[in-house]
Length: 372
Image (cartoon, rainbow, N blue to C red; front, side):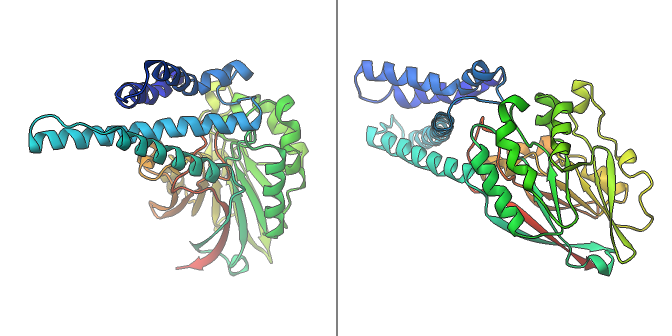
């Protein structure tokens, strides 16, 4: 299915952009082959590793494939806009409208440049984003409490050891009270990613580093990865919680497994189990990789949910495509039945479509404050 979907933009570009150009037939044929090869990036990824989610090419090749597919997608959108404009002109003025080749070359150049910018934005070490969130009934001892949310690191050939080390160094330098990782650490098996994830061993915060799985952990040996992350010093919150204490007052950090867990025979997310025996009256911060069940969490008394998964929609304007399957939640802060939901754009994103335009990656420092 991936291969069919990813072929559509290239077929549109071939039929509506390339073949109308006044260039030699041999050039058109060669360009057609290149476009079809680029459109099948996920097929080549599967052949390289057995999974479309873990391309095992050298990093420059992965970057080139992402640029090429991004350029194809953007050019397809621009071509659709050009066709719509041409149709409108024909209806208004009557007769046919000829689109000069220079116009087509112009939109192709724009698509290529925007794709290059988008890939560069996607693969950088993310900048710091500060977010202040007011919580009702937050004990004064936790007023100003700082936690760092990392999510959707997707450590892979595109986000290798050097990138992971830079993220860890930047995270540790912030000296926050708590670090939480809300899933999708990796794309690949332990054998493939062992060295790339190793810098996570030095990630630290005053009250520790806690994590939950994302859907991608279940693609590559969930049990082995959960053990590995735990051995690295991070603490899992899979349908469980921990209590942070300050001068006799408590803050609950709870976590659930991913919605896809049951598809691989693992425990489904169980909010009831995660909140079992939490201290009465303590504010609850929930870690849930996918944001779609936020309203159910609000009904259970959670005051703040931290999620990822959507990558912020990646491209401003196209981000609305991600809204419906995620309960309407795509990027940033939401009020979900009185609970604050924060959907993180992601520390990184999947190497199968690494493009960001208007939805930047983020290293998210959240400061809790008292409200109400």
